[in-house]
Length: 295
Image 1 (cartoon, one colour):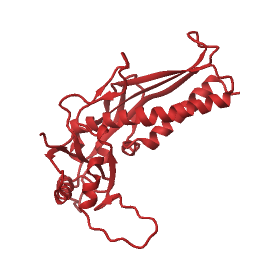
Image 2 (cartoon, rainbow, N blue to C red):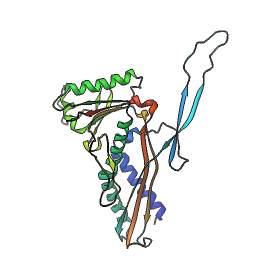
Image 3 (cartoon, one colour):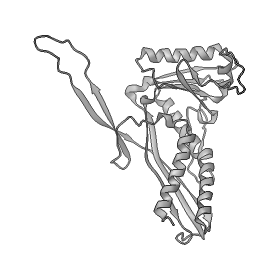
Image 4 (cartoon, rainbow, N blue to C red):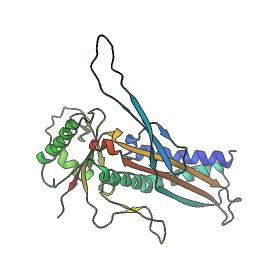
C-alpha cells in the first residue's frame, strides 16, 4: 500500500497533468529559459545578450565581441490553494478514483479558467501594442486587423516562427465567415480554422479573455476569480511565446488519512500552487492585443 508521501505526489501529478492538458496558456511555458528557483519568493531568469558584427580586418582578424549574461529576478505573487475532505473511505482504489473525479472537476471548472484568465490579463498589462476595435457583424475587418498585428511584429523584428494567435471564442464564427473555403466529399467535415497565414489559432472562452480580473479569497463563499467593473473583452492577442515568462514555484499536494485527520473522520486532501507570469519588458513588442471598443 502506498504511503502518504507517494499518494500526495501521485494526486498532485493528476491535478497538474489535467491542468497541462486543459490550459490554453501552457503552450507558452518558457521551458527554453534557464530558471533559478533557489529563492523563496522569486525565480531568476538567465538573460544573455551579445554584441553584433564588426568589420573583419585581414591584418588583425576578427573584432573582439562580448557576451553579457545576468540573472534577472522575477517575484511571484500568486499563492493559491484549497482543501477537500472525503468521508472515510477504506478502500485505496476507491479513494484514488474519487480524488481523480475531484481533480477533473476542479481543474476543468476552476483551476484552468483562473490561471488562464490571470495570465491573459497580465499579458494585456505588459503588451507592447494595444488597439481597440469592434468586429460585430464584420469579417474583412477582423482579418485586416490580424494582418496589421502580424505586420507590426514583423516591423519590430519579432521572430515569425512560433507565434500564437489567441482569438475570443465569440469571434470564431466571424473568423470562419471571413475566409472562403472549398469542401471535398470527405465524410468528416471540420469547419474550425486552426491556422491563418502560419499563425496557430487558439480560441479562448470569453470569460477567460478579459483585460482585468480579480482573484477571490475563498472566504464568505467567494472562490476563483471574477470580472471587475471596467474590465474589457479581448478580441484577439497575438503572441510570441519567448516574450513572456510563466513560472511555477510550488505545485504541491498533501494527503492525510481519516485516522491522521484530527478535525473529522474524513480523509483530507490539500493542494497549493504558487505561480506568476509577466511580459518581458525588453520583448514586449511580441505581445499585440486588440480589445473590444467601449459602448
